[in-house]
Image 1 (cartoon, rainbow, N blue to C red):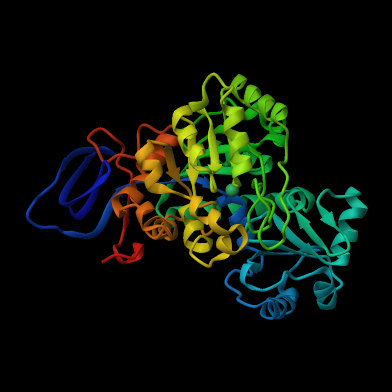
Image 2 (image 1 turned 90 degrees about the vertical axis):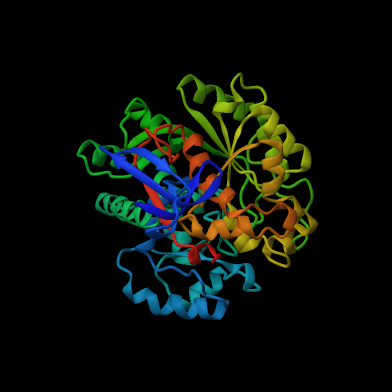
Length: 455
Ligand SMILES: [Zn+2]
């Protein structure tokens, strides 16, 4: 077939014929005089940092995405309550960055006496009503990061909500089925997934039964590593554990990302979550097990720590920094020098990173530090894109790469597609896909030009 535009290497070529044979690319010829299929053909989209499993689980719950005012959110919650079965009601995806305030325990107490938990879109913050606090305390005692007077919980509880309020096995299975269909429809066939032990166990069980169709490359949270040790050697085309995930800081939205300066709105700084020695142990253990670390680091202080710790590894190129959102100029250079992989989310630029957007309001001029795509190209930083499932899929993020607040940091469409395909496959260690070349697997995604905001 002859495609109107095809991504070959880092460039888009017109009128390009791609032939396949037996599931592999057998020939590629560019520059013909016509096309048969419109849009753009790219190697398979690779989402290097995703949470498709927990996202799919959360879609089964009421979601507050897109609600613009706190009053509307409270209305929505009271209407949806009746539809939710089970003891504890969990609602997901609220984004209070433009609400003027965060809902509190008191707001939620007025709505219901059932245990109710709202989790923010970033996953780092939640609000609980009094019954939810009591429900959790009866079962688990005191919970770190939960402020009982306001009902606000940061980091530990929201990030581990599925451990405190565990889903049933059938729900886990249904979430994986839904994750596969969702990712597949978005053209994401290769997934760098951050996920929990119970999902990993179910993914392996389903793969053994031939029920997985996408390629899952998974990082397990460090505190659950022991629980999946028996699965570390399980390797198939569709599934393998490749990494260990640990958090160095939190998120900007929850004001828990660790910067070298205080937030402009709260006047406070957020601490690092761990000391260097602990993180070095994580690296050593991962390396002993043949895994890479996936260090979540958003603020410049956390990024500095990630680089400092990874510098002591004998093989920094095996490891990754997730988000790498607000590095200082020297951090870009150091990441390049060490050869560590960096997973960036250009969708954060589109959603929160524009002038006068949320990042600008809370970190001020440091907004200009974030996601400097062109700088990374020039320094040859090893980086690829992922969505963090906010929202899932590459298209929203690609627009962010094309619309950085600093025009000189923007990528071209071809470069952005490359970072979401070829570079992603390389980062996830998949040599057989990710390039439209003779001998590679015939796995492709297509995208219409309108979808990525060009025509
Ligand atoms: Zn994430």
